[in-house]
Amino acid sequence: MRYGGNTCCVELRCGGHTIVLDAGTGVRALGVALERAGAGSISLLVSHTHMDHIQGFPFFAPAYNLKKTLTVYEPPGLPVPIQEALKKQTEPYYFPVPLEDLPAHMEFRSTGDHLHIGGAAISRLDLNHPGGCSGYRIEFESRVLVYLTDHEPYRRLFGDTDFSRAKDTEIRDFMRGADLVLRDAQYTVDEYDTRRGWGHGTFDDAAEDANLAEVRRMMVFHHDPDHSDDFLESCIASVQKRYKLDPARMSLAREGEELEV
Ligand SMILES: [Zn+2]
Ligand SMILES: [Zn+2]
Image 1 (cartoon, rainbow, N blue to C red):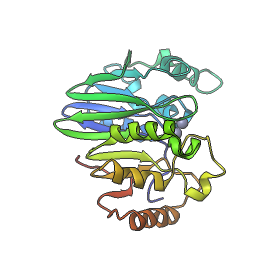
Image 2 (image 1 turned 30 degrees about the horizontal axis):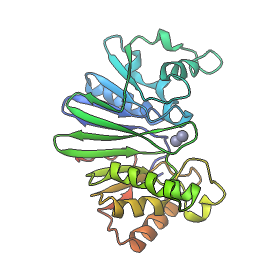
Image 3 (image 1 turned 90 degrees about the horizontal axis):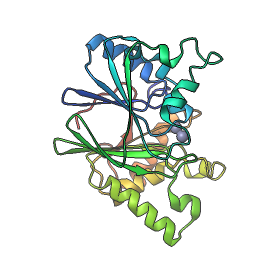
């Protein structure tokens, strides 16, 4: 009720350009707001095609606007092209309006590992998640935001090996010095034991990375749906204390919250 029950969707405004990070169920309300505000061009950057990251797209109001252009970016390594995944979830057994009947002009482009959207320079990195997932480091006017969800730290899954140490360092270097990191913290360390290999991390992983990657501000989201607001608050208070991170450096993301990076 306080932190939000929708699945992943973050709006990022860089100058006049709107970048939408993932199209989970949160994209429905965002679409209404964007239409009301008369937003111009919109780019959609998805981390991967798991249902909780694309299922809001058929309800995205700008897709029903004939005058709108939506650019949908495809990261490398997806099991199926993004266009096909979006199309499949509008097959008649799921949804009444087929993707190709949506009136907006839709363009599909590849992200590669580096791309520019408006004035933003974006780098992409493979994360550790079943079926693959991409993290994004977005730089605009000397500010850096890192979007890093659906990632299971390598040392959690594989133990303390040379491989996992090297891969975790690569992830931390990707986050290094960021002004804001939006990060998955789905489980507690105790819960993780029975969810090994599901592709998510813990509050402790996020807190440890905030320190080791010298992140200015870490906000966590993509919580386990069974976690209540009170439970989330106890989890964040615990890591703030144990990792010596004050609330300005590590906090829970809140649905609808607006921040200037
Ligand atoms: Zn996923
Ligand atoms: Zn997810």
